Amino acid sequence: MLPASLVLLVCLGAYLPITNADRLAAPVISFSAGYSTYLIGESVSLKCLTSVVAKGYSFYRNGKLLNGPQDTSLDTYRIPSVNSASHGSYTCSYWVQLSKGPVSSEESQHVLLHVVEHPATPRLILEPQNTVYIRGESVRVRCDVQMTARSTEYHFFKDGAEIATNGGTAGSTFMIDTISSQSAGSYSCLYQVKEPGRILTSMRSSQMFLYVTDQPPAPAISYGPPHPVFITGETVTMQCETPSPSTVSGYRFYHAGREVAQRPGTAPGIFEMGSVRVDQEGLYSCIYWAQKVGRVIPSLESIPAQVYVTEPLLPPILTLVPYDGRVSDGDTITLHCLLPTQHVNLTASFIVGPGEVLHSASSNVTEASFSFQVNQARDSGERNYSCFFEADVRGRRLRSPTSRGLQVVLQARLLLWPIITGVILVFLLVVALFLLLCWALLPKKEHASSAQQSTTEQTPPPKDDTDLAYVSLTWSTLASAHSSDRSSTNEIFC
Image (cartoon, rainbow, N blue to C red; front, side, top):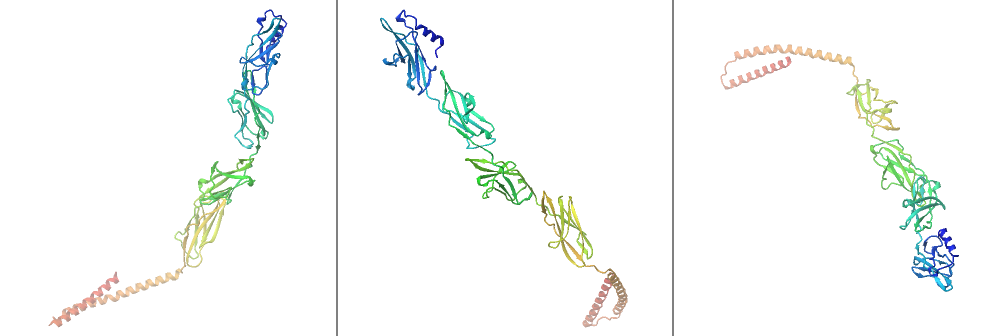
């Protein structure tokens, strides 16, 4: 718009007489809308302002006359729809009719007409891009401009009402930190571009609907067999139980917060640990994935389930009193079942033979050993004794292996007085026989010696070889008998 003082000056000049026709004042050209930048397709009006009442007007673009003779009476030049060819420098002049003929003024100062394309329509983008958002998530709403325009402001709308205005290049995003049910709705945006003398506003983007849903409810995790504690080597099977299995597309299992892989071939929602180890003890949980409005959404995590793993119970140690296990019928033998570790709620059982339980003893406190006395029956033979125990381990009743068996030899009891009397009689008989033998052997020895000496003295020398042989044989026989008597005598005295 022209300043008010300039308009007033031009109007007053129309009433002043022209004293010098050769010096008509130059007019002033201006845009009727007050700005010089126009979008392609918009209409433009140029007005030529003079200080006198003019007879006609002429408009020029880049020095070329625009209006024809029929339009010279109008002080306004209108362009119905500008295009890129409309861009340029515009001027105007006027002429008046004097007595000596028409006189034209000088051309006005030029004005520059800027023709620009309409700002590109932006595109609204939700980051991350999802078809539905979970309550509590955050989302960035971005107004994407596909041109290097000098954007001044970005305007964001929800359900048609403006909710945010951000300036500068960084203002192209609008953040929803925590999505709630009120965040659901239709979102759009536009931006403004500053051009010479004018701020251009883009078209509003297409609407993007933001859907909000609750996270699927948590499943329940269970394991079987339903023991609170498992022995190493056993198989543990876990199941993730969901409230709506028809929409479930997958499962995840976690051990101490870290995902564990399911064994190939297991059924959906089943996690199996074969030959469980002590290092697999801990808290286990699971989630499932549900399909909602084209998005696979993870459920809330289940309440963790504690799995305990323990080594098998060690067998107890059985001891006997007496320690050699040899008893007579009617005697008492004491069995001691020694436990390798301390447990609570114990029950120790003593076994005879392949599996006959003789006695069981229980205790609700920690015990190191159990004892049991057995009165042996009146028969002979061998019996095998052993023991085992049961204990509560974290709520599960476990049975230990059976101890090593010990044999008890049962001997028949003999009558003492008959045995003692028999032993004494045998001893007296042996002594009597010994004395009788000694008495009998002593005289025979002396007689044999005298006879030998007499025979030696009275035997005449042999007369021939036959006599000599006879004497030798007689002497040899006597010597052998004498040696035999000495040997018998020595054995008896020894």
